Image 1: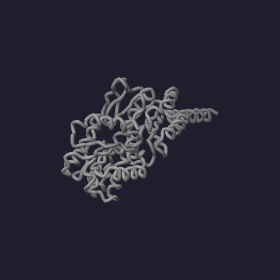
Image 2 (image 1 turned 60 degrees about the vertical axis):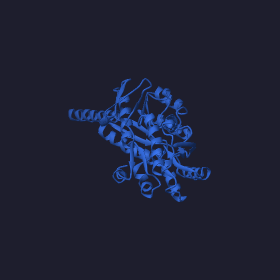
Image 3 (image 1 turned 90 degrees about the vertical axis):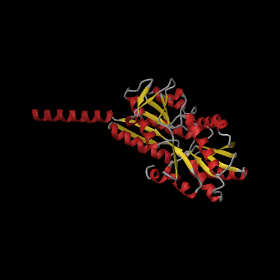
Image 4 (image 1 turned 45 degrees about the vertical axis):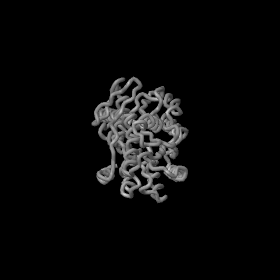
Length: 330
């Protein structure tokens, strides 16, 4: 009887230990603007790396199949029902997702926005991939350099953005407009929207080429839009007449650099961005984050302003001199 009692106690302790271990796992949902987007898939690689380093974290990579706030809200409601510990989201709309994220926070779920922000009431920390002003100026500078390569003193430039409500895109375009006086060669003629969809971005580019016959440069601050625009320029026989630049992934833009549809573009490392967002979410769950700083793991600490926003790093420019090296990485 004593042996049975001891075995029973041992089994009970083991069961409690396993149960406690399972409960200790921190579940962090990494929510993309949409699935099937190379930028967010790269961010997920970084998030999974962070989870492995932390050891007690499980990252649930998810997102809608369409780039709408409504679709993202549906995903968020599902995550709340699952009882995740934290949500790290790149928002399709800064305001529309606030009510559902407030509900999440009321239930004890920590919320971080990254890449494309959420209004302050809907999150605790926002991680900008870089300094917004610098991103905006980098886009204009790249356009000016493209015009210079074409020996054009002043040329028409169009912007191909994601959705009209995309937080980061709108901020960057606003910053671009602020610095236009510093770059007199850049004549901004219009802003078009491809909704972060390849087919629509392609059609919008074809429309731009037809509507603005003197167009010289298309700037797309969307990793989906820039690839589609470069392909459209190639298909329309405009290589050498129109250059595409903006923000893109080296692995997806290598062909455009080699074909001549693009001379250069910029991006931060999305792998690092997903990695950092995961660490920030974990820091909030474990109560380690403060109002002024939080951990990004091996990337160091991010300084937070009064609104809980911080920036990760400066964008890096890619061109023919380095594209082969980086296209093998992300």
